[in-house]
Amino acid sequence: YMHDINSKDADGNTALHVAALRKAQTLILSLLRNGASIALRGKKGSPVPYISPKVFEVFLNECLETNGKSSEDEHFQLIFSYKFLVRNDSVSANYFPESDPLYRMSLGKKTRHLLKHPVLKSFLDLKWRRVRNYFYVNVVYHVFFVILLNLFIVDRVRYPNYNATNSSTLF
Image 1 (cartoon, one colour):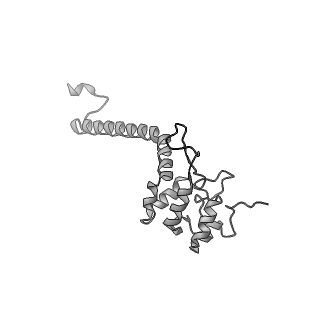
Image 2 (cartoon, one colour; image 1 turned 45 degrees about the vertical axis):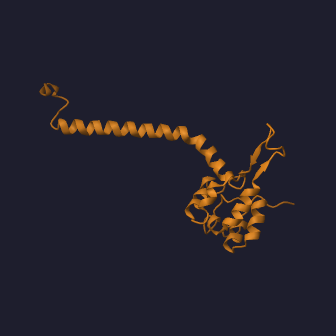
């Protein structure tokens, strides 16, 4: 009989939250290996600030595998596991996007360097590839808006008494 490793107690904490708050690093590593999600928040928030950077690094190294072929083989593949960032079953009220734990890592001076780990770096690269077109469209839209706003302001400064109903006064 299997239990959901991400189930919550009466306070809304998962086993990972309790282990992280107690700084039980070997238990944290075991929970992460068995599918605990860092994307869930408990009563005290994200478990990320309470997890040792060394534990994260060991775990992230385990999330990177190969298909067993030699690196010189043309069919060589690296396999990244991102399952610790998301929860695929029903979304609870305390579910946050997979980028939230990465944001929490970026806030901590001790964990910030982990964002350069190949697993997290590849994940961020994939996320960027999905959203970059929206980002660039948004930038173009805002630049266009600022240009139009500046043209409007310059027009109002140049012709402060211009009335649209009396356009013959300009010439």
